[in-house]
Length: 87
Image 1 (spheres, one colour):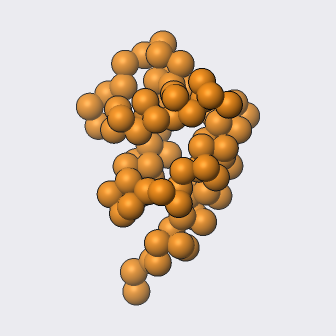
Image 2 (cartoon, rainbow, N blue to C red):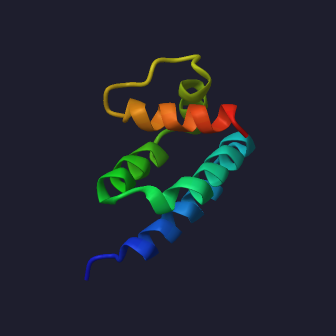
């Protein structure tokens, strides 16, 4: 039985909160609370792929220390960057 979008969003929100680094947990939790409801199925797929990344790499992408690899949606990382700059 496929997972409903609401259950999926709750699962992704939980995963956003349970990171290895506090900084990443706080950022992704706040982003997810604000934007998960706006993401369609494809957006949820891209966010879930992002959550698979190592916390240190993810933080480096968001602060611009490292380039975002082709396997990660750069526009989603840009959205998180903009979110971070406005909180």
